[in-house]
Amino acid sequence: MASIRELFLSNVAQVVDQPSGLEIERAEGVYLYGPDGKAYLDLISGISVSNVGHSHPHIVKAVQEQAAKHMHLQVYGEFAVTLQAKLAEKVLAKLPSNFGSVYFGNSGAEAIEGALKVAKKFTGRTGLVSCEHSYHGSTHGALSIQGSEEFKQGYYPLLPDTHLMRYNNFEDLEKIGPTTAAVVVEAVQAESGYFPANPIWLQTLRQRCTKMGALLILDEIQTGMGRTGTWFAFEQYDIVPDILCLAKGFGGGMPLGAFVAPKHIMDVIKANPILGHITTFGGHPVSCAASLAAFEVIESNPQWLEEMPKKSELILRKLDHPKIKAVTGKGLMFCAHLEDSADAGKVIAYLEEHGVISDYFLFAGNAVRISPPLPISLEELEQGLQTILDALDAQ
Ligand SMILES: Cc1ncc(COP(=O)(O)O)c(C=O)c1O
Image 1 (cartoon, rainbow, N blue to C red):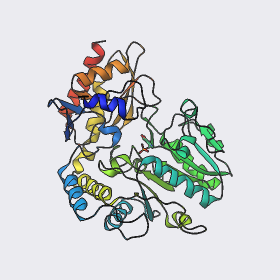
Image 2: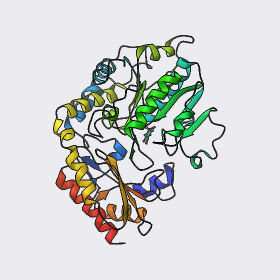
Image 3: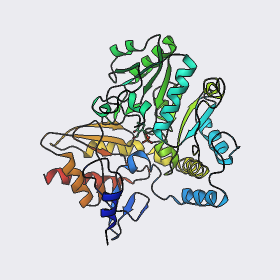
Image 4: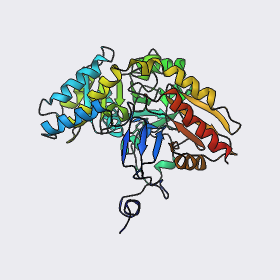
């Protein structure tokens, strides 16, 4: 009989030649467990998803209760879905008062797609500006604004009138002009290797958008839900975006995305024509229940955010090794950029063998990811970091 790994490799569509193919039976807190009971310390939270840890009992209970009440009933936007209404109220309460409307989707890419459409319709313009080395999703619109030519090959034609600027580069802000509908940017650029925005640059970018009448779409798909030490990273930059995109940790482990905007901007999708953006599953009641529970878990554990600077400091202090060129990041999202003498692939394989989960970045060549669940203790974090150092020593 074929093993699960063999069935996975032969029947499930693959996106790389040699995936890890690791089998996990269950996960709890900051650990994943294989079928043989082997424990793996999670240093990446399923790429910034499992912010509150795995299988948190409050989220599991919320999911079970909602699944038992009802799952999908009707397509998005028709019925007054209890959990959507409660979650939208919760999200808006966390944001500045200009935000007034939440559109629920299923994923990060969908949040970006919806935000791009709303910006085009609201401004009556087509220009889209984004950053080199940015990743906003794999669908056609999100791919069109992706900051890497290599990944677009084979998929043209994509959206026209897209323009790339360099992240943290002041000169390139000139690319935002009178035909720009929207600028899509991250407060910490994720897939280039967790590079935080220069606050003055992000503030100047905000001013430039306002001056040119372009909407600022902030992709907080990885940075949201406390990952940088505040609910949303923009709170630390003294700016307010026009549209905020959320997903990953927002769903509390379930598939959920959202874009949030002022009501008068969001309302462009409900008239001329009606149904400007629709989805069957967006805002699924069970996903919304998990998300609401995730908000509650973070609210009832304020120490996770308060104590985060100690964890950031530990990462920066501990990752001092001749084979580490630089460590970049913020909060609990860090990237160890390796010297040429080290190989990220070998480090990640060593970590897995020694019971620690890490991963690559899309656009940071030789680098290792550290973005554990927020409840990780200092001792657990130190142990994970030590295993990274051991992996480097072993090369
Ligand atoms: C910053 C950022 N934006 C958007 C996305 C797309 O999200 P999804 O994979 O849910 O479509 C990702 C996914 O990795 C991301 O890291």
